[in-house]
Image (cartoon, rainbow, N blue to C red; front, top):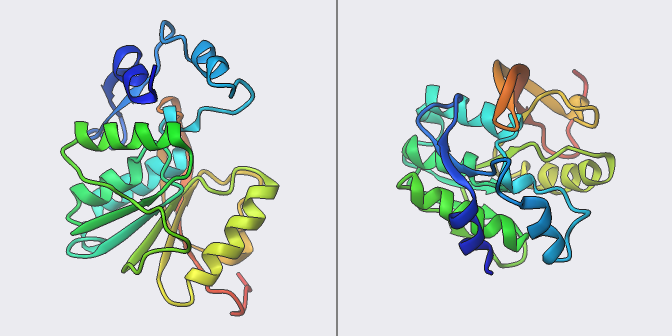
Length: 211
């Protein structure tokens, strides 16, 4: 079974509480997600693409309240996962939204979610990044190894293009490279009690990192 067919047949398209105008295909207790991942040989990999993480949710809320940030602009959703951030950018008026997401399961999920919300995401499959007006990165500092690689990549990109990061102050968030722009209370993984999450501007590499 393809990832697309599995998601359509076993996930439920449900609205998010934040932002409330976006719905995502999300697993239910009867989705058999663990079994599906095992069949794909990926039982040990977290299905991050199946949930609305707080870092993406906080960026989506921020864009819904500050549409001028993306209206009429070309945007990149870096590490798109479910596609939540890219969808929010499209709904806020971005003229074109690129998405970098190498995981084929996440790729299927983000395209289905975009379709369900009347948005268009263009998958970027080339080396490097497309030329855009703004880079958005939700929950991309979730462990030390990934955080180090991601910081290097995004800091280099920030020398030419503004980068906004969304994160619920996770342990490996490189706060000394970020400027806090806004805070919101949003659910993590799409449910449960809201958590504190921030929207940050990433400083370009080789520029002072004093708070």
